[in-house]
Picture 1 (spheres, helix red, strand yellow):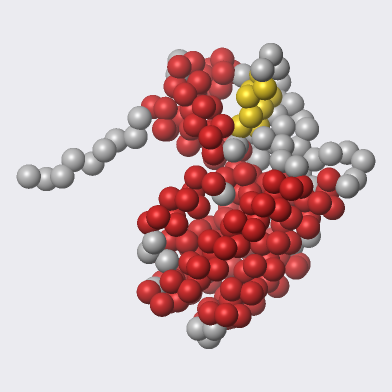
Picture 2 (spheres, one colour):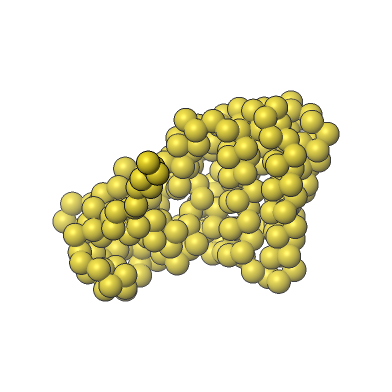
Length: 228
């Protein structure tokens, strides 16, 4: 008999749409979310929206404040630092596994996304840059062939994905340092230098926390816009 391929539930599809909207910056950090408006936009009932928001709350992408409503998360600097530490540990492990198990596939994917980021910068397309940046790092996790790490990464790293988009599209963070680090990481992988690649990745990830601390120290806190 042919195996049955499970179909995604309406709640899962709804969560995916809202999650991607947060990742792309369509729903900004701190934005107030209306179940009814989201349901109207997606042309569905409020029930799957409510269930999806509950899931996204577990992932850290959404906060429910009693008597105030539901909001896209706005992290403090300690949370961002903790998430970056968490991500650095996962990516360091996956770099080692990926270079052992899928070096050619890893290098091909990293090179492709690096070229896409270069194209996005030339086109002044911060959304496209953020997407390719995300996929650059996702390639490291996927090529590790460790399903447990992949699952943890996907369910815990969402806030950093959204924050990265926010910094590049809203705060206009500079690309130069990030691209130099991407280039160095790609070069280390091409040469099979695991230790060097791990050090570069860790420094690159920690720069996100540094950018956020800098943005948070300014007069206008990032991510406080409300979508009406």
